[in-house]
Structure formats: C-alpha cells, structure tokens
Length: 83
Image (tube, rainbow, N blue to C red; front, side):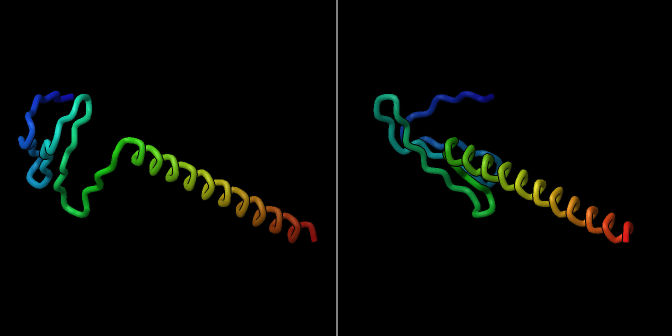
C-alpha cells in the first residue's frame, strides 16, 4: 500500500487516466475529487461492498435455480425411463 501526504488542491495521478485531487481538509475529513473514464468504476467502500454482496447473492440464486432446474429435468428423465 502506498501512503501519501498531500495538501489541499494537490493531485495524485493513477495510471494515465485517473486523477485524484484533494479538494478540502476539515479536521479528520478529506474531500476528494476523482476524475476517471466512464468505464472505470469509482465507489465509496460501503457502496463497493454492497455491490459485491449483491453480485454474490445473485450468483448464489442463479446457481440454486440451475440446481433446481437440473434436478427437475433429471427427475422427468427418470420418470420417462420408468414408463
């Protein structure tokens, strides 16, 4: 992890196309301006974690639906074999 000290109005460049500017410092709060291309997602930590959790839940639901569908299809195949 890189730790930097910056003053108000100073910038940090990340790669060729992300710029972080220190906009304001008040007590223990720092305001940042982040310039990034539209295809580069930028989120606060709590938003990022919520998005990741929703992705995991969606993947789990899809996997469960797939298991149910396969189980249903397999049981139909067994029923036809027994006829």
